[in-house]
Image (cartoon, rainbow, N blue to C red; front, top):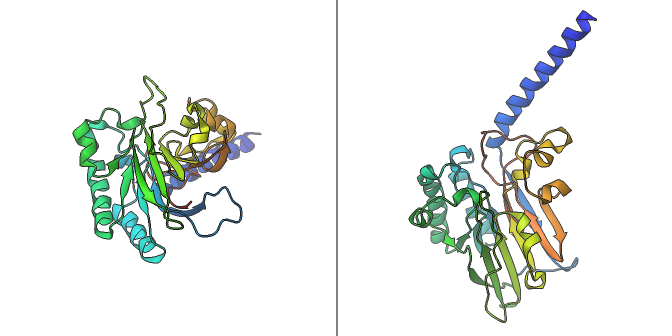
Length: 277
């Protein structure tokens, strides 16, 4: 019995150490996912081709900005990109926003060189960054506003609209920004995917793209990270990462590229998303 107990303890310790090492390695890996969002299963050429990345959390991001640059250049050179979009959460500590600004400015300079719009929204961790700090991040901030892109398929106007994030302390769910009449589609960028539960008129939204959840960041048995450690609603229903259909809206959630609180990920590899709509 004594030997069995020692063996059990040893197995637990070894397993814990292995998981610890894996969780420290995973934030340095990067997946490139390719998503097609469509209301038509037989859809042909896309209206838009977007590169999306989210949840930078620059102090705990181990994906070099040069790697994201490389992906942008490769995708722009192959099938082209209609926009690069950032999904919010620049940093963990607002006093260190310049670390995130340096990263995002590098991406912005690449986009300018390639003549690709660089759009973005802010996340819950960005609420305390001063307005001039957000400007230093060099993306076109569409939080509470919109930008118009042209469909590569038929030339129609497509709205990319952004929703503000109030932060968690005093949570407010904002209304959709108004967009011009005549847009063939409205694609909403909202940092927190729970925003989809607070849209009054879902008929005004075709697609929503979000981040925030990090794919769980550190996945645990019985999904403790969602049932006990987070207040977000959708993860409790296993809406964590990938594509879903909710309230008549096609929702895509990215796992993001950085880490919050701990510089660790487990079964939630960082990702940059190539999205065709």
